[in-house]
Image (cartoon, rainbow, N blue to C red; front, side, top):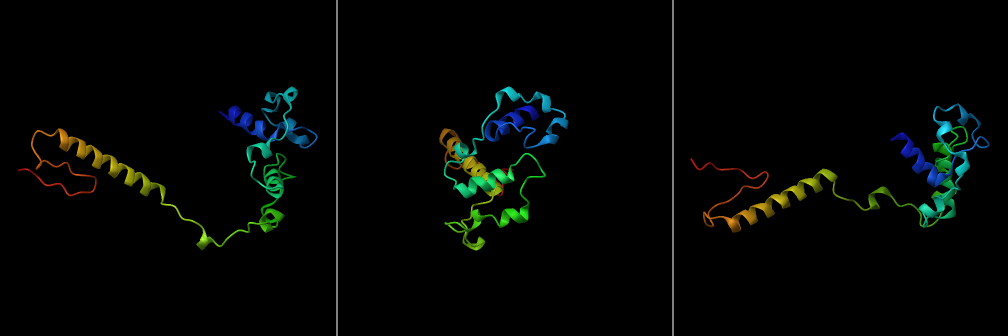
Length: 141
């Protein structure tokens, strides 16, 4: 639900206060935030391997108050993008199979396994064959 999402966000970023975002009191569900349970920003715990510049950039990107949030243009100029290891060219990035190809390959493996299992239990002998996905089927008639 929306309240569960808000709870997860505030568990990491802390509860927004009127000090940092005065307009928050006008939001419909503001009263549901329990200000007696003020939480600290735990972003460093959630992303422990990220540099200080990385944490700073994430905090600026995730700032509750939209007026204080960093712009995309300013974010691209953030020092995080100039620290080592430097970003690499896109063509040097590792590639991964597309999700639908992985699902198709997994489905084909399952079908092949089922066909092998059926062939072992088959009382018709070794000539019986279950077609796999995409394989042309032949008629017995």
